[in-house]
Image (cartoon, rainbow, N blue to C red; front, side, top):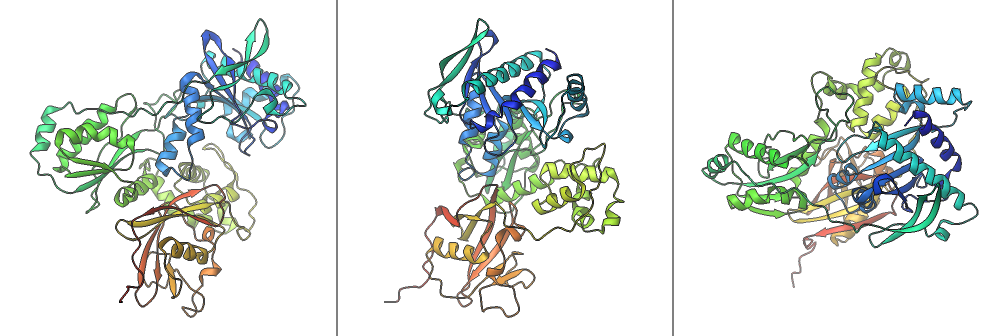
Amino acid sequence: MTADQLYEVSFEYKKTKLWKAMREEEIFAINLSGGRMGYVSILGASGGLCGLALYIGEEGIGSFRRILEADPFSLSPNELQEYLFMQESLQCVYETKDSLSPEEQEEVRHYARFHGIRISGKNAYPQFMKYTPYYCPWHLREDQDKKDIVRAMSAALEMARLLEGRHSYELGLQPVNALTEEVPMLEWTDGKYEQKTAVLPKARKPEWAAPKPSNDIAIANIKRIKKSGTWECGLVRCPRPVRDGKDRQKAPYFPLVLLAVDASTDQILPVDLAEHFEEKPQELLEMFLDALLQAKVCPKEIKVPDQRSYAFIKAFCERMKVKLCIEEELPALEAAECDFMEHFGLDEEDEMQVVADTVRAILELEPEKLREVPEEMVAQMKLMAEMGVLSRETEERLNEIFGPVTPKSSKIREFEPKAKRAPSKETYVISVSIRTGCYRHIRISGKETLLTLHEAIQKAFGFDDDHAYVFFMDNVRWSREDCYYAEGVGEGQPTVSQKRLDELGLEKGTKFKYLFDFGDEWQFQCKVLRVLEKETERFDIIKTVGDAPVQYEDWD
């Protein structure tokens, strides 16, 4: 299939603006060559990139359903990331020119010049991508993939025609959920489309890898080690992809690692990254056994955060008679995961850590000095932003000053001082604990102040709001560096009503203390579990574990 055929149908599809008539979850089916079934989702109604996604067969529609189920309010960041990494689809999305590779830019320009098309607008350039589970989105290479996406866009043109003057529900289009059994279908037969219905494959539960230890010598040696301690273990997907060798034609993939942390000492077991874990889970288990032998440790108990980690390590625990359980609140593992996400992949060659330590200082330079920053350093900073290493405010300032860049070129924008930050649409999920086994998870809008967070904590633990209090944002008790007091308390110090949460630089993993009642000194440890790009009403208490302590003892 030629590139011209791809661009021809993509420019025609863009004219329809079908995303104004259909939502992403209102899918329809199409027939593909070889008896395969495809499911088309129109992208853009929710405000993201406009375009089209094609999910092929049972695996494809299964990944679509998993994305629909990925509720950021009920999933941990690791689980949410895993859902997104499991996507399997072909997509055409409309991007800015700078988002395309040089080859893609040349292709689309050639087509536009030859056909007299003027490309204009914010997101006007079609880009064709393939999503494969646990791999980076990659350019369409296979001829069959190109034929399939062309068939999907052709069917979308027909759907746009059918929807003229109609509502989507009149054609049987309804949001898909776990109970949906049928969807509308456009079947290509004898050179034309026929409207039918198609039965959706039933949703399947995830099947997690459950390898069994096969190295009897390693098991025998580990059995000689005295069992001790409780270890927190979890499978974590790396945030930065790696390549197979130096083949730049293949899509990079996201490796997996088993994080294992001693809950009492915070000792981390050095387990290597697993390449293509889904194909070879046994290799990661063997690396875990080797790490235990090297460290000369054998856990007495292992706690894991989810079913996937449980399935992975279950056979080992049964053979070693190690107690295994699932527990959602694993502070040592959470801390290790935050450190891992922050530092993974910062190798010496790229000097990524050096750049991370200096990015904030660089962005505070005068405009004249900023223009002298080498292009190579700008490219490294942008790479760190893509990896999620930089804070949101630093990333925003980086984009404000330098704009979108590629490793080959970067041009500084005319510098303009940044205006005071307007209220964001961020929502925070904050864990607040008062002792081991007693904590609450609070979901709160970034627009709210520390005063509102105080009210939420009081409600969550059933306390009477009748004493002074203070937040120590540097997580140091009685610090005077970054603290916010109740109104009328702490002379000369900023108050809780003066600071919105989205102005505090909160990120996943940020810890701070809340101290209530300066006499009894009730100390609460707070930690940001998630930062969600979704607005919420004021606050909600979404999880309660353990009985709250009694604020006032009954002496009668």
